[in-house]
Image 1 (cartoon, rainbow, N blue to C red):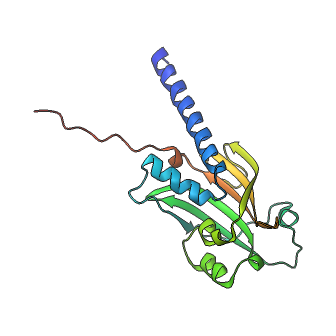
Image 2: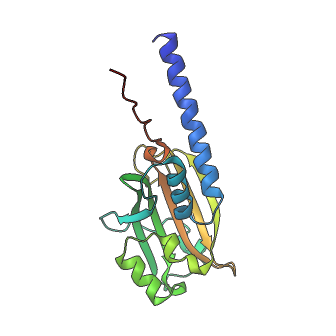
Length: 189
């Protein structure tokens, strides 16, 4: 490999690390990953309409993670909701999320929206004024994340009174790091 090619790879790796760190800071700046992703999508010009939608990923729910119910402060008798979704902005899948949540803390309308719509969890439950507590954040994927995950986070969402509302595992894709290509300028004839 030539020196210039090696320098180009190092520069690309450095840019990726910087972009991943910037995404991590953006996610830490607001309780809602959905809000952070919409702001990120708008700032980077990733879609004409920077609105994040949650598209369900088909398949059965996985086994509950170890310690989930203890973290949520519930016993085996409490019914939990589960969503496995791709969060997309425009045509780009920015993250894949696994979300276990307490249905008993949500209104009937909120539960129905989570069961039937493509509205992200953070938007549905925003009237509850939740906060976000990051449990783990790492470059690369957590178990259950798809190949190519560049950043993953596990977080607890809490109500203002401190009760845990949800636990999420978020797997951010390389598409989240994209930048729109520069418009081409026609060459003079």
